[in-house]
Length: 431
Image (cartoon, rainbow, N blue to C red; front, top):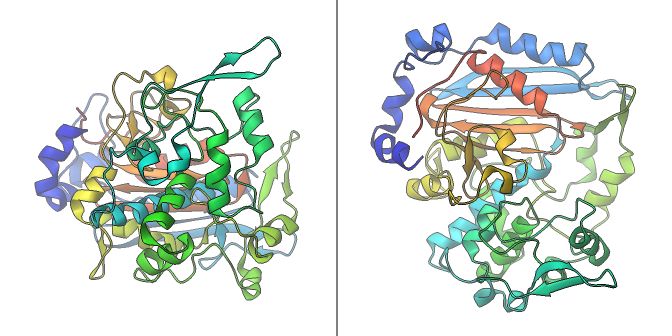
């Protein structure tokens, strides 16, 4: 990955137009002859098929390629019970695709010199100074703890190597996280910041990649460094400058008719609607929690403006959010090679790559037919209801895929990438 940035940064746009290199097995024929070609019928057929096969209720995809919109397609229903079609202006809950927005917000403050990436977290949030690491159980079944081998750094918080958890397993630490409830909708971010250090770390900082509430700690840092509420800072710094008027944590009741319902796959293969009250409670009840790791609703057009800003090296339509060098830093694999695949949780399942700051980063070509298609240097993230976006600088490409089906279904992403790139695409070589 580092070699990629050294050789490609100076010719960023030139590479977008270069023919894909011949590989063995060969790349997609169209890609090898004239650069990546967007096969619109293939993309439409894929989207239509996942509706026809009842893998989801509704979906859309927006493709930006070589400086212009290449394609948009929507199919199915946003609200099956109300027979509302999935449209371009449909509002979707993006869940963890909130995380890159939070990361960008924090990095704007880094550019202002508010902190150093390798600063100890406790230097700025002292409540984390006494955090401990879980070290087994005592005779009474209580968690034993010890001091961490080194302090958590802000870099750890940005790349999920702090040792935090999300409370999503039956591990004793996760059970304690659930009991303490730092991310309860009834808490403020400040209250989250007081409760989170009460939960021991799963691992010593820097030794494992573990998906966690670290991005909510990033939101807390944004509040600390900016001196304003997290959502307000994101609005002023990212959403408003980019014209993302349809994106936010809190919604007006007038938005409800455009909201896509969430659907959950059942054991018998059917899709059942989530209770609408869940969304209403989270977005209209005035709960104080504004998560850094989730909670935004958006549209494909709004999120594409965010993706295009990233593709543009931090700038869109004359508005600069971050420097190109900062975007490259965020999109560089930040994981120490000493963290083996076994210590990277499910991250290797995303493809041949590592993790930057709130992005998966591809560092190698797809190794098997089952691996998602993509190009070295791309960076992306996704969201629990099978949402996805990615930015591919080598092909001057950004894609936003919207659907609302749970649990997360990675096969939808595999099939979409195959439709966008072609099933045999390998792209440029990695390190």
